[in-house]
Image (tube, rainbow, N blue to C red; front, side, top):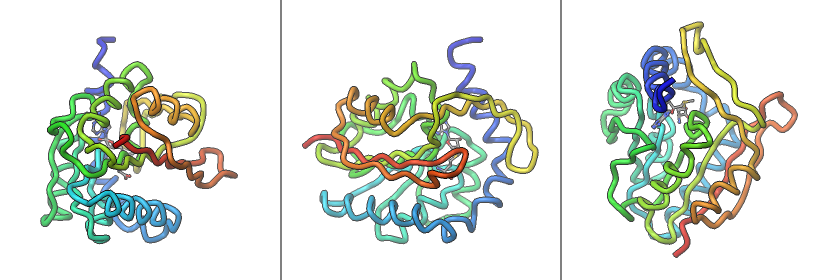
Length: 214
Ligand SMILES: C[S@@+](CC[C@H](N)C(=O)[O-])C[C@H]1O[C@@H](n2cnc3c(N)ncnc32)[C@H](O)[C@@H]1O
């Protein structure tokens, strides 16, 4: 396998499921009070750090980007999948969405006042994390917050279908909050909080709050 095959496979997979993912996820956020809670906390942290543009990296169809915008955050979305970005633009025509990869983030240094990666870092293998997190730190303003949401676990699996039985070939890398925090520390972030969701479920979720030191 070529080193970047996983990236092409991830893009193709999310292009394939973009429409069903958009339909399935469109109205789910209001049913998830703890996700809404951490997003509100993140919005407050952005405001407290002075406000400004916030990147939702791996935004999918943009429902979380739109939720942040509804909280008064100047949020925009970036996603690897052109089909996801088409859907995000159609669903939220008033917001900005661009195709791009977090492995080669096309944003200027210190240009964002916050960065969210919600269940998108799960598709980045360990060996590519330092590059991705270096980009996250580079594009954040000093003092700006980062929030990462992810599946909790200690193993990686290959997902071969999803979102209504559509074919996928995408690796899902589950990590513990401590492992994610350690990676973030190594990339120069200060860790501020962990939140664990659904701890009694087979695959809990977590959000880690971090910050580029001022
Ligand atoms: C499970 S979905 C999460 C979407 C959205 N953040 C949410 O919470 O519903 C994962 C998303 O990450 C995107 N993604 C995966 N790898 C990426 C990369 N290297 N750069 C940018 N986006 C990526 C996928 O295209 C997909 O839209």
